[in-house]
Image (cartoon, rainbow, N blue to C red; front, top):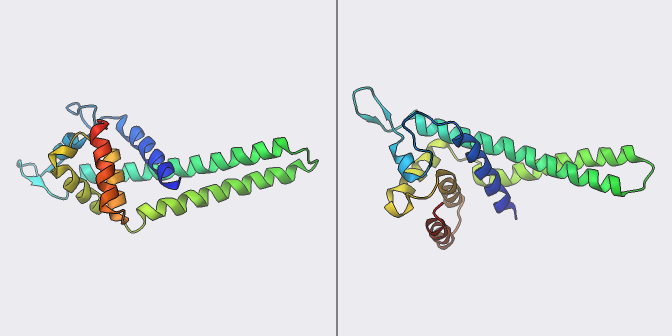
Amino acid sequence: MRGPAVLLVFLFAALLVSVAPVSAQDVSRRDGNWWLAKNDSDGKGAVVKDGMIKRAYLMGLIDGAALLGANVAAETARAEGAARAKADPNPFAAISGVEAELSSLSGLVAYQNTALEYLDNITVGQLRDGLDALYADFRNRGIIVVAASWVVLNQISGTSPARIDSMLERLRKSKQ
């Protein structure tokens, strides 16, 4: 269950990042065609390989996913603790409130441990290179950047090639 939860948070963060267009020329769909067009120029028409546009986009995506995931995990745990406290006729309700707060913290720790499985020791440059490689295959260009990022994070973390192929096939068919 932890993989889908991290994916959900990652997708929601991407939605937040995609709300503000980078320029008036941008299309609203952030897919492989959009990604490949995001290169910095040296001012003389030459593309700079280590461009900041892609790096900035990915840093926002990762930071947004981390912030959102931590908040979702904490709020979920807090709500579960509050529901238990409400259902408990225990006259020591204050103790239940403390338990809810501790549950909230344990939810945050659980999210961070899961996120580290996919994000620990991964650089923005590594993720950018993975997206560039994934989108080099023309069949993948209709996949939105956030979903493609999830695939690349899975590749980096050691998910089997068969599972990656399955993920890509589903994404290609779903027009994501």
